[in-house]
Amino acid sequence: MGEGRIRVHVTLLGVFGSTGLGRSLTLELPSSSSVSTLLERLKALDERLAQLLSDTEYLIVVDGRPGRPDARLRDGSRVAILPAGSGG
Image 1 (cartoon, one colour):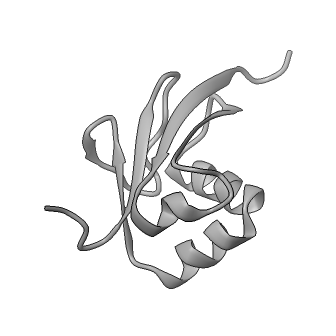
Image 2 (spheres, helix red, strand yellow):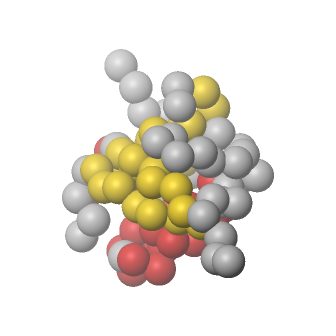
């Protein structure tokens, strides 16, 4: 039997929202996925976003809390990626 899947809602803020992926998208990932898994998928989907993630310091927020690369995602997780230093 195959691994289960989850749907993750992603919001790309600041310069990250100017890529070919737009400002928001929903991705389906394996149920064992972490923030790192999500980042690798995003990089594979858009070359410009991959370059920005390599060149720009950024913050990740998962379900309203700071996200770490090893943080596990769950079905329905909401992830925001924003440049460090963004804000009001």
